Amino acid sequence: MEKVFLISYIVSLSILFIFASHGFIMIYYYFKTYHIRKKDLCESELELKEYPLVTIQLPLYNEKYVITRLIDAVVRIDYPKDKLEIQILDDSTDETTEIIRNHIKQYIDKGYDIKHIHRTHREGYKAGALREGLKTAKGEFVAIFDADFIPRKKFLKRTLPYFYKDPKIALVQTRWEHINRDYSMITKTEAIALDGHFVIEQAVRNRAGFFINFNGTGGIWRKEAIFDAGNWQSDTLTEDLDLSYRAQMKGWKLKYLMNFTSPAELPSEINSLKSQQFRWTKGAIETAKKIFPQVLKSDLPLKMKFQSFIHLCSNFAYPFILLAAILNLPVLLIKINNQYEEVFKLMSFFTFAFISSFMFYLYSQKDVYFDWQERIFYFPLFLAGSMGLSLNNTKAVIEGLINKKSEFVRTPKYRIVSKNDTIINKKYLPKKISFLTFIELILSIYCFVGVIIAIIHAQVAIIPFQLMFSVGFGLVSFLSIKQVVLYNRNLKKNNIKYDD
Image 1: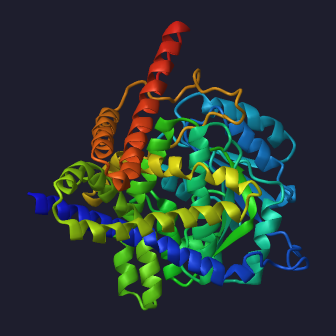
Image 2: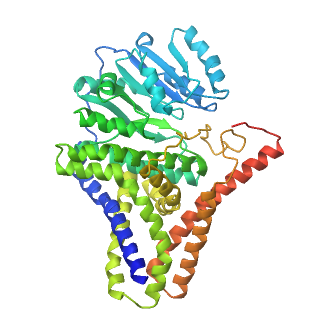
Image 3: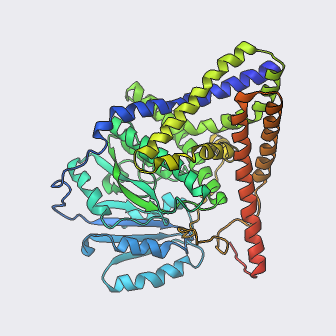
C-alpha cells in the first residue's frame, strides 16, 4: 500500500510539474519578445480613414445591478452614431428586461440604433444569444461586452485600425483591467490570477506566434471570420475558446492589445468566483476534447501543438492538485518511518515548479504596476486559494470528461466597486450551502492534521505546502458558508423574499 501511495503521489507531482514548469517557457518567451512588448501601430496608422459599420453586442442574463452602467458606457464610445448598432441580447427572466426597456428610451430618442432582443428561452445560452444577434447584425465588425464591463470611449478607434493593417486578423482582444481589485482579499487574489493570464500568457503567446483565445468580452471580431469559422457553437461552456481555435485553425489571426484595457468588475464573493471557475474549467475541458484532436491531426509545427496542448489542457492539473492534497498525509507518515529516503530526496526536485509559478506571476505584476511589490505579496494567498478551489474545479474536469451537460451558470455582478459597497442585500446570491463546501471544510481539517504531525516530527519541508492546502480549503469553505449564512439572516431580518 505504501508503494501505491508513493507512486500515485509522484505521478501527481510529475504532472503538476509539467504544467507548472511551463511558466519557465513563458518567461523565456517573455524576455525573448520583450523588445516588441510595446510595439504598436504608428500614429498615422491609428487614424481611421473610414468608419465601417460596427455592431456592439451585449449578451446578458438577469443583470439588474450593472446593465444601465454598461449601456451608458457603450453609448459614450467615440464613434459616429450612424455607423453604430447596439444589440442588447437579453435572456433575462427578472426585472432586468423592464429596466433595459425604460433606460434605452432616452438614447433611442436621441437617434441611437439600439435593438433590444429579448429571448424567452436560453437555448444555447451565451453562444445561442450571440448567434441569434448575428442573424440581423448590420456591422462588418462585431464587438462584445459582458454586463460587468465598462468599455472605454476610444475602444473602437483603438481596435479597428488593426483590421485594416492585416486583412487576416479575425479578432482584436483587449486586456482586462480590474475596477475593484482592491475591494477585498478575494478580489486582490483574483486580480493576480487574471493578470498572469492577460499580462504574460496572452501577450507572450501572441508575440511568439502561438494560438491565443478570445476572452468572451472586451474584444471585437471581423464578422466574416465568425461565419467562416463555423459561427458560435453551444456544445461547450467556453464558446469563446472554441471559436478562437476554429478561426485560427482556418488561417485567421488573433491580435492581442497589451497596451489598451477594458475595465471590468471582478466577482466580489466566493460563491460567484466558484461558479465562474467551474464554468471556465469545465468549458476548457470540453473544448480540449473537441478541438485538440484536430490540432494533433493538423500540419502545425510540433511546438505549436505542444503550446496548444498546454493552453487547452492545463485544467487537467486540478484533479492532481486534489490528489496531492489527499496523499500528503499518508506520504508524510511514510517519511516519518524513515522509509524510501532516496525517493524523498529526489522528490525535492518538484519544488522548482513553485519557483516557476512564482516567476510567472511576479513578472505579470512587475510588467504593468508600479507598486508590484505590494501586489505580489498576495501570491501565497493566491496559491492557497487555487489549492482550495481544486475540489470545485476537479468536479468540473470530471463532468467535462464524461460529457455531463450543465446549465451555463453566469457569474452575477453586483456593482461592487468601493469598500462602502455591499452585496448583502443583493439578489442572485445562493441561499443554500453546497455539499462540496462541507467536503472542503473536512479537507481543511484533514490537511491541518498533517501540519500538526509535520511540526511534531520536525518535517519542516512539508509544512508550507500542507499549511497552504489547509488554509486554501479552509478559506474557500469558511467564506462560502459565511456568505450564505449572512445573506439568509439579512433576508429574514428585513423580510426580503427573492424568487430566484
